[in-house]
Image (cartoon, rainbow, N blue to C red; front, side):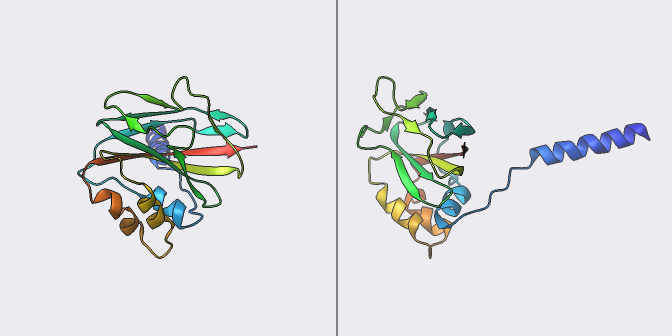
Length: 173
């Protein structure tokens, strides 16, 4: 009986640990990024960042793409405000080389990404496209509360030459 109870407890713990944390979508921008899924024709992109940051902390991001392309970093904060972190006015060259980890900000650049208010869960999305293009079309679609997530991302996913990765960072006081 002891072994059966232990086995059931272990199974319960494994199931509980394997489930993803559930997030409350604060609006259409958050929902669009959180629910976005790459198409079957996309290529892998990885995004590494801290899971937690305190107000004022400098955030270091690392991105890896399986293809050469152009990197776009988009964030939605806990107030559902969508913003482009990269490229930006201090670093407009958003090219990324395949099979190389790239730091954002790049080494030697005199800027950083700082954790700031509002506190709570922020979602980051790294999108790599194979053409320079303009991410504003995608951002406009994401901001449209009438559009569904699938429709919002059709602008990107219509081109098989793209990849994406997501990461959630909790900003704390």
